[in-house]
Length: 374
Image (cartoon, rainbow, N blue to C red; front, side):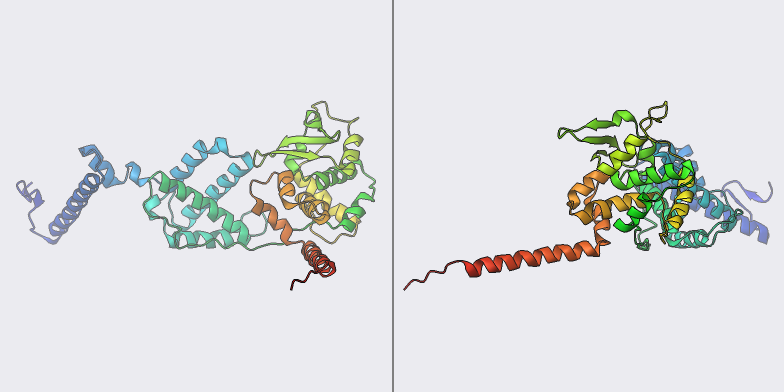
């Protein structure tokens, strides 16, 4: 203790090492005072434990990124469908790998998030090559991961774990992709083609049922007989809720859809489900085989059926977009308008109808008797 000054609480600066020790103690003292100042400015209870927690970054103001994800997934999961929650878990997995490989750590404080972190994470996603052979993440796939990270930081801002938005200077850049759908001719080709195997014929029928009802894969998979009701007009309709949005939809059965439904009534599963639906992966794989057999040169997935209902079956035949939006179970009309944009034929027809309207109006005005007053 001969080198320690008990009154100054500092070392006697007898050599360079003791000078460095005093410098370090001065820095620690300044940081402890700063922790006290922060707690005072935030009108929080000031105790030795509170100052210590702030100094070591262990208080609630120093929430970490992984803890924020954990909070989100454990508290918000009841309002999210499993498919959506699974996507958040995928983004969390990417972040953990990025932190370990690039930053050599398991976690970071939320206050460390900045533009550079987001840009570097984006580059990591785009260039990441997993052990299993598959394509690297597309632009829109990378943007989806960043969008989920943004939702976590927005939650942190609301919970007051963050003061500044790390995404304030970052803009998500999605590529707009044209939505594939079947034309009336292509729809007819699939309808008129029979296959040697029972499996392909079943997949064809379920796909066509989606084309004529607009129901998604999961909605058809969960469809039961008690959801097929008789409408006030005497026609059958499907009354269900969309799994994705929980929106109620009532879809009148078109003759083609009713024909497919009647075909499977006899072999209905004991569970009461209307159709024998395979896994989404198997459906999409076999739909490629069906499209090749029908000489349709498009990348057909099961979701193309929903696009076909929106475009070829409804909008192209003059069904108002507001009605189509209700049938599809969209929560926003702007979502349905995406389908309307791809129908250049429909735009041309609408403009031609407008021109015919003005011509008829002009003709009516020219034929109307004119009166002259002196």
